[in-house]
Picture 1 (cartoon, rainbow, N blue to C red):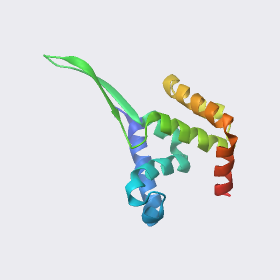
Picture 2: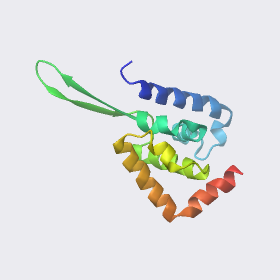
Picture 3: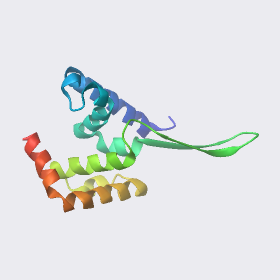
Picture 4: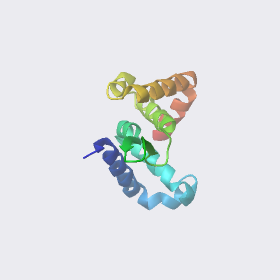
Length: 134
């Protein structure tokens, strides 16, 4: 398999569809925001590392006429938003950020660290998520 983490990213997204199926119309943003909510639900379900690492694929190509790169984003959230969602999940669940960092590539760990810094400047965001989660 060429991109196993991206495959797991897609599977976690599809699992989140199943988890949200009964509440699509009642979710914030309604049906129009369903795909965004699905990616967020995959992070909340514990697949944040996979969502962040597998959310982008890059591959080189070469033929008789040209050489280049193709870069594609899987899912509906940017890498920055996935990193923020993972950081919010980790802090709201009182998981040591170093646990997540040990599994992230250098480019994704930079995004994750940036999100952590922002959330540490605004602890009320994490507190609100903790209160909602009960």
